[in-house]
Every structure is written in C-alpha cells, then in structure tokens.
Length: 197
Image 1 (spheres, one colour):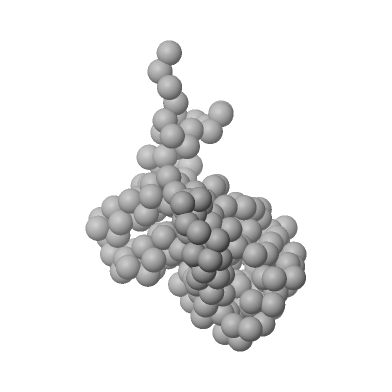
Image 2: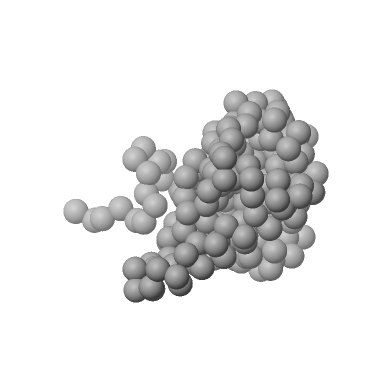
C-alpha cells in the first residue's frame, strides 16, 4: 500500500491541493519545520508565477513552533505578491505572527475565530546547548515574536511582551481592537469565487 503524502488529511478530496494552488490559497493547519518549508516553497512558486496577484493564507492553527512561523513570515516579506490573511478557527501565538503580518487592509478573521496569545515555543533542538545558551535562545525567540507582533499591531513591545507572558484569549472582534486583524468578515469578500465550480 502506498504511503499518503506528508500533510495528508483523512477524507481530503483528490485534487484539492491543485485546486487550492490554482486559486492561490495556502492553508496553515500546523506550524512545524516541515509545514513551514512546504508552505514557503508554495509561496515562492506562486510569487514566481505572478508577483502582483494576492496569495491568500488561511490559518487555523492553535499551536505550533514560533521558529517555523518566523521562517514562513520571512518568506512572506521576501516575495512581492501581497499576502492576504484569514483566521478561520484558532490562531496560537505562532499563527498570530502570520495573520497579523498580512497585507494592510487584508488581515481578516471569521466571526468565531479566536486568538491565543501566550509565550512562544520553538522547535529548534537546544539539547546540546548548555543552560545559559538555551536560556539565551529562548529569550531571543520571545524578543523576535514580540517585535513582529508589535510591528504589525502598532502596540508597544513591552505591552505585547506582558500579554504573552500572562496569556490572553481574544475573540475575533477583540483581535481587531488589538490590531491583530483589520476586519471580521461574515461573508466572502467581493469577487471571491471559492475553489469549487
């Protein structure tokens, strides 16, 4: 029996990946090294195909690696195609980096989306580091995440750091007030066709 491809989801219709790529939609359901590498490659391919048409990043990922998210974030800043983001479901800290950094005016969430701000976690192996180096790496990761979120929300980095330290759960409306998104949408944007038909 042939093994399913990496990232295969049970019940996923044949041809869905091709249809999503054709419509320039990337779905973020998990954030680890492999997922970030795959999504970055797809983003670069879509940008090479058309560096003007938007790429739509649909996010539903309540946990994940901040290292992976920062890698994908860097790629979204590298390409010329605008990246429109949509949170459909939940976004943990790693996914919030991606949602908040979408093209201005095109950072959206569905009404029942939630945003989970908490201390970031990484996926880099620090087992070979001594305690001081491991602590320094954790601090570097926290600072990078804080800086990115502050940059895209207009909030003071100290406020962002404090919120991540304490933890917070935001509704879609609260996320808009916080500056993580621009708008809560309850119907498809004008001109949206979806991927069927």
